[in-house]
Image (cartoon, rainbow, N blue to C red; front, top):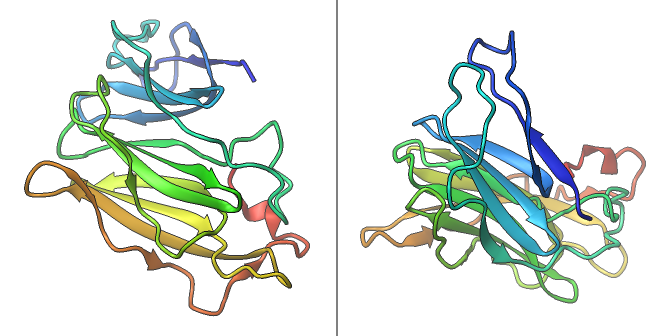
Length: 223
C-alpha cells in the first residue's frame, strides 16, 4: 500500500483545528512527548518510519521537523493467514508498530513491533532513540517461548520504562492451531545507558488460552 496520513493541531481542547498537514505513509500511530513534540510512526512497504512535529501552537498547520521523516528499521511483516483472524489481510498490518515516549525524558522514544523471522514465528521487539528520533539503536527481543505466531503488540511508558503486551500462540498445536495467550514484558535503560529487556510474563491465567477461531473471538483483536 502507498497511502497518506494527515495530522492537525488544536490548542483549545479540540474546539477549533488548524489546517491538516499530509504526508505519505500507512498505518500512522501517534505519541506526544512531555515537551510537546509529536511523533508519528508509520510504514512504507516493509520500512517502519517516524515523523516528528513541533508542539501545537495556536492551531497552526503542523509541518515535519527538519530532517524528518527517519527510517527506523526494515522489518518483515506478519504473514497471513493467521487462523481465526479476519483482520489478517492486505488492509491491515499485524506488526502493529507503536510509539511511546519516556515520561522522564522527552528525547527518549520507544517503538515496539512484531517482526516475522521464520515460517511460523514472529518476535516482539522494541527499539529506542535517545536523541528525539534522529537515530535508533538495535532492537531488543522481548518474548521467549520458542517459535510461535505473535502479533499486535501495544506499548506504553511510565517512570521511564516501556511496557509491551502482545498476542502469543506458543500454546497452539496441530489440533488447536488458534490457541492464543496474552503476554507482556518491559524494557528500560540499564546502568550503562543501554536498552535491556525484563523477563516476560503471562497476563491471562495459565490454561486459559483463547480459541480465536470460535465465533466472536476474532472481533477482539486490534489491527
